[in-house]
Image (cartoon, rainbow, N blue to C red; front, side, top):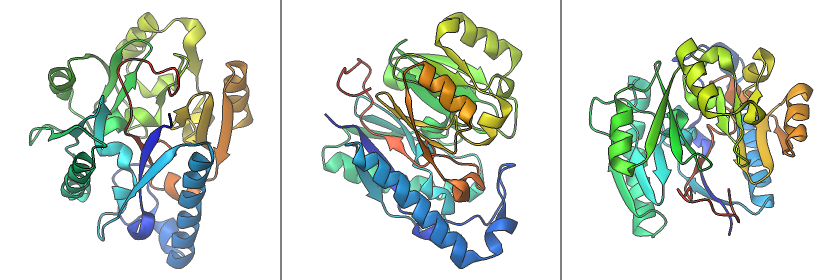
Length: 288
């Protein structure tokens, strides 16, 4: 059984505004045609690498004026066929909500998703970017602070009937949980501690034993390497430093390095560019 991942066509991708510290519209605008071509190449390479590993990739269309639609990790929280659609904090991204609603409704009509529901208006929560399923511990890890509301966690509990553990993000650079935290198939957590409040680090350390904590350095986090797509024992990730490759190899993971530089200048990596549609709350030995 293959994993199923959603990506968004990068036709309308650009870096034209700044809503996080990584965004570099000045760099993009130096040569727009070259930037567009390189972004398309990098996106296509990620998609090809996933498909070569037997992963099914669905592609939704982009939309003019919504460049960050290319990051579908923020579209929804998806578990057991239920999709809970995001509400975006910044006006620049709020137009994405209608696009994702339309596409996920189509997925439901095709039988790929069983149900689709949005977060209530005014309750900000930015999808899997701030809510990651941990099948090993049977809970969601939920980031809150820069983008998602803390009170959104109660709605996740009510919708999915699963435990939610909140982690406060305290750095504008690591504005979504997925930028600094990754749940791996073997139960390990790859994370950058400095992105979290002291209280949240304590919570994490109480739930995750030292043997399952993989601590990322500032260099590794800044490369957006923590923002990884993990399927089985493989991690697809942005330009991982040798130090991180070695840490993951020690845990029996294989790294698939990718140049995603044109998306890093918008504050996104491999995980941001994808959304798993087949997450289930009970571990499937064939696909994790």
